[in-house]
Amino acid sequence: MKTDLPRSNKQPSGSPPKPEWRWMIWYLILTLGLLWVWQEAARQVVYRTIPYSEFKDDLNEGEVTDCSIAESEIEGKIQPKATSPKAKAPPAFMFRTVRVEDPDLVKELDQHGVKYTGVRPGFMSQFLWAWILPIGLIGLLWWFFSKRMGSLGQSVMSFGSSGAKLIADKDTNVTFNDVAGEEEAKYELQEVVTFLKHPERYRSLGARIPKGVLLVGPPGTGKTLLARAVAGEAKVPFFSISGSEFVQMFVGVGAARVRDLFQQAKQHAPCIVFIDELDAVGRQRGVHIGAVNDEREQTLNQLLVGLDGFDANIGVVVLAATNRPDVLDRALLRPGRFDRQVVVDAPDLGGREAILKIHSRGKPIAPDVDLHKIAQETPGFSGADLANVINEAALLTARHGGASIAQKDLEDAVEKVVAGPERKSRRMTPQDKRRVAYHETGHALVAAHSKHADVVHKISIVPHGRAALGYTLQLPEEDQYLMTRAELIDKIKGMLGGRAAEEVVFNEITTGAENDLEHATAIARQMICLYGMGESVGLLHCGEKPNPFLAVAGDGAMQRDCSEETADAIDREVRKILDGAYAESKQILLQHRNQLDSVAGELLKHETLDAQTFKNLINLPAVAA
Ligand code: ADP
Ligand code: MG
Ligand code: ZN
Image (tube, rainbow, N blue to C red; front, side, top):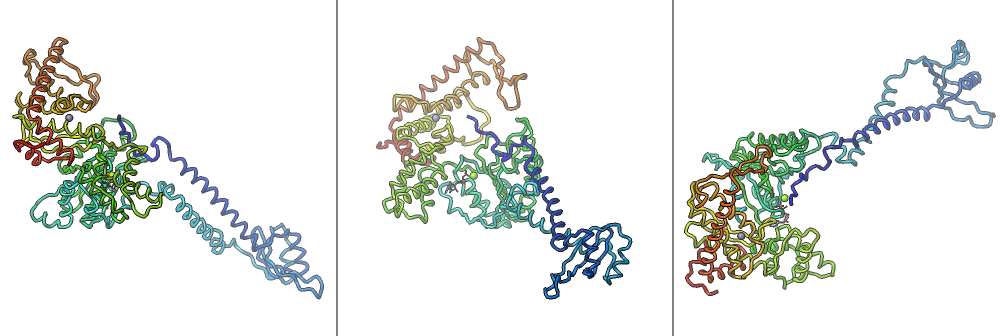
């Protein structure tokens, strides 16, 4: 199943940014309305508007004390007279009236001894009152709203500046002690820490530290945690940004952000730039079509430029994490960019116990708790799953009012996490685990007892990804440019060893060997079709070429360039090779049945075996099973 749709866009890129603009227009209307109301209200409060006739009456009664005559209106002060000699006079008030054509006004004003002035439209004071104050008020309102509306206001005002600015962590407070298991990854990253702490050591030697380190591993295994730990160990600022944050609504924003990010990083060197979920931007270019991908390509290009754009020794180290290294653009992985890869694997038994220990630190744990046992019950759990188990256990304890987390709570929590809605972790039954152990041991033993096979480096029955339940890692001892027929056959034998072991031990076969069969068949087919190693087909080269009419870059529409009869003959030869190899690997396993049992037993106990342990086990002449 493919689940690699870009998980990035918070807003679908197709729809225009409507809400913001509608909001702006409403805001404008509101502003104008408010301004008008304000000016009116200010006058209403201070000045009482009266009809001109009333003004004339008051003037004739001698109540108007002074006034100023503007072009279109008259303002002034009226001191009403008391209605009876005993009563107190009503308070004076300011008045305003609209001017009416009245040529004798000045004469009358003189008659009643009113002080009068002519005015130009008031300037400073009016300006201050009518504009500055309300605008100030509105500004305040805007500030208040934009604070409340948070991101909405921000997306209008400040798109284009990097989100990384906000997350520059001065000290992450995480160290390697907070990461359990993953010893190999920690070992690799220790070098980065040393470099960030003592760059002069490397500089004086002329050594170049890798600029980019890619953390690769399944989700929840602690990649993000490790990156933070590196920053914490080295005590340097930590710029973190997620790949999906680059890919945004506006085209060009992602690229601008990358530029910004690197600029800031250079200023803060030594520091760490961490790009989480790199696959969201780092996908292979040119495979997809559409606006979103355009944007991503621009961002990716900018990222490549950014990675090239600083000297390796200024002290900026770019860490990135992904769980899909297979989809990354190859340009990202070339030397000088993310040329170093650190595998962050699902934890094995010891690792799981250590993770459980870390996460139960500082929590009240009952004395009966056996974390080793919990670790044994949880193969395939990632670090995040185990952290979740501890948390669930604490919740369960709280629910039944316990004082400390008991073994029972932990076991219930495991159940809960396994049966939880996501079912992302697989828990193998003991039977399945036994089968997988024998299967993997089969691969390893057949390889060990074949003359030309690569050396076994590691055997593991920790489930990986979605498909593999375990794996046997074989690495050649030296680079090899040519392979002999015998070597190829031995390779096929090793691949079929898993299936053979299942048949030898359980007398029953499972679905677990599909991948092995696929690879073995592919090699056998290449031997016949490409390398001319078949008997009846001989030297005929029968390749599969991309179909020129159907092929899209990277897409597999293949076309065979040989006849039907030849294809038949090829199939028969492939079959013969596979059958022969299978018979041989079964023979090997039957011969070394005791080793099969002892290695599988050991594997069940520890879940992973390294090269040395494996060698010791099969070199002991007779192992008591
Ligand atoms: P990833 O980035 O690989 O998907 P995270 O680093 O986000 O995983 O891990 C999620 C959480 O799981 C971490 O915050 C931590 O609590 C826990 N965790 C995962 N791996 C480990 C580990 N090796 N040691 C301790 N805790 C871990
Ligand atoms: Mg992560
Ligand atoms: Zn296998």
